[in-house]
Length: 269
Image: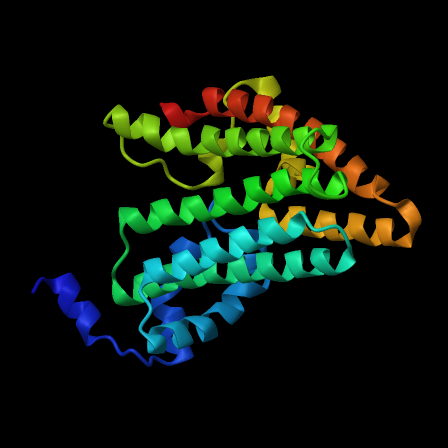
């Protein structure tokens, strides 16, 4: 048995919360520029060790927890397509659960020392399912239900495609570097800065008004809830439709800006 396996075997399946925080929430995790969402920093990392403790006692593997995260993401997308206020509240709850499980799967992996490429891959699948699925289902919500010929469903599909493309632009940085035999890029803000003057200025402005973050499942769910409240007060679907149009426009701009930022930053050099 190697040292890693021995260390994992020696760790308790019923650790204290303090032990979990020490081992599974190092500074390298909590200070990541791109991989740590603000809700994790704000409150989920405070809560996640309690769930992680339960999952460890239940004997779930890290990948098993990630599959639960994917399930939550899929359910979030499904309920998005149901018109009404109740489904919007349920969407927010499911997305928060998805993000909590997203914290816990990594914590289980770090505690058991079972981090793997398969786990990273499944984690990415979960985020694609959540963000792209919610975007597509927003088109169904805006249409008032599933109507294949509706322009709103077409816009939802377009939004889902743009969000997927935006995520792919980031993921392909790692693919390109791997193909070129380069080391993994550091997840720090300095590396993400464009090197050219105008783009660097625009990047700083985007950080002050970070509308590119609207396409994360957390922000999408909160925006959809806000639109559902407005519609429930008498807008009769106009808020959901207006939100969809605005998100499509913002996503198109983000895809172009993100591509330019990647090509002019140090991430591919």
